[in-house]
Image (tube, rainbow, N blue to C red; front, side, top):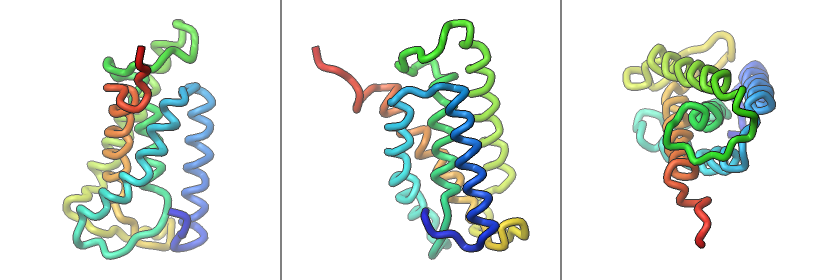
Length: 159
């Protein structure tokens, strides 16, 4: 994740980090969101093993996709046990923002069609893009968020 294929590739991922940080500033995630994203990091890379045609990859995009899903999912998921970080008047705007982010990630993955393309050439990044990384990261973000905030396996307190 720390190695990038070209300076434009690194720049695009750094812009993604900045955008995710800005979204986090607006959506006020809880520590559970951060924990879910941390757990999604290794799961993203494990998911890459499910694409046998991909012999190597570089970059942060899969982990960034995981972060977007980990940030957006608690805003819309009815099972989220996340304590409110903002006043109730923010409920609808947060739900709309979360839904828009999840819809955007879903459409992006569908357009990239990771099931049909191991690599896609990208003149903007001057590298070949691995769409499977985006799918793997998004799935890892959803799974880890559900584990932390849905069933509370890692954050449940014993009474």
